[in-house]
Length: 70
Image (cartoon, rainbow, N blue to C red; front, side, top):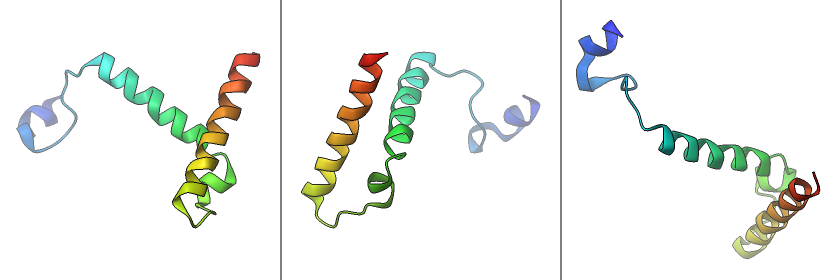
């Protein structure tokens, strides 16, 4: 805490942050991490953008269906 005060605006996470924004950002980051478990999504195997998008949609649908089955 002392180091943050000493550095001022130049560095470090602020001691106070919005928990709602952080929670929402965490959800999005976890979603991307789960999508990247799919090999084709993580390595960008498809060369065309529309095929890559179709892969992302398919992987998202599979994740959603698995979550709904629980």
